[in-house]
Length: 70
Image (cartoon, rainbow, N blue to C red; front, side, top):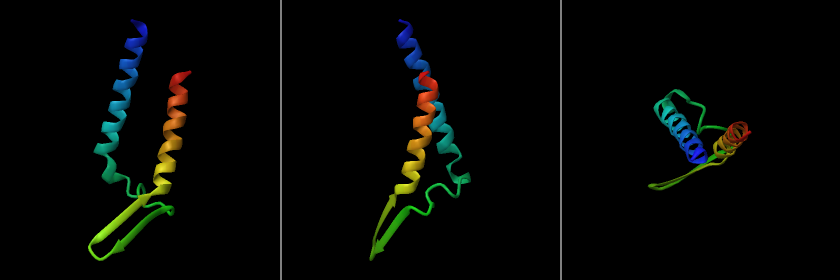
């Protein structure tokens, strides 16, 4: 069962990182307010499209997953 153990350890590490990000989200004022993040307001409706933040997080996660996979 070594593959199962490895998957559980990696899953636990991912949960720890996500938990830390959620804890310190307020201390990252630039995250979510990058130049490519769009916000539209019309009346009582607000639409927020965090395009640049999504691309940045995708790149960081891709790099991290490739490092751990090797």
